[in-house]
Image (cartoon, rainbow, N blue to C red; front, top):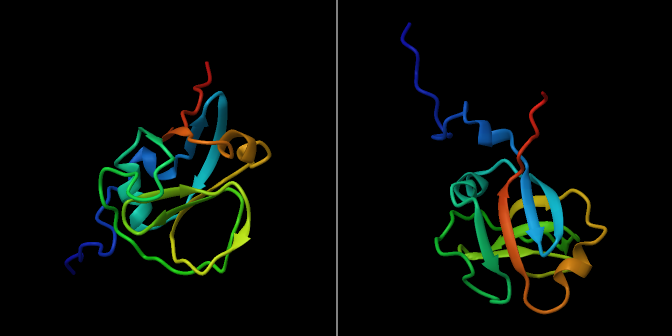
Length: 135
């Protein structure tokens, strides 16, 4: 019986980046984040590494990403979301919202996230977290 090609995921499932975590650097602070599993994240990973100034409220990405926006009701501290198709948003406090976002991931430990992001423009680097090799 002939085997049918897999559908729904055109990315290489053997790609080691598929299971990697995201490293977010703001000044001297570094945060680990866990990716969601969706097509937007797959497209976002292809842009890494990247450094952006998160002062612009709209269109802070050079490329449009695919979207699947929904209203989360409540934004949580540490949520990494896409607003529209070109605006990356890293939230540093929780609040209710009527806006729709596409979820990309979540910062694992948000203890110093507000102090790193909350004052003026922030230059933020997004890259894959490198796992140290055992020797």
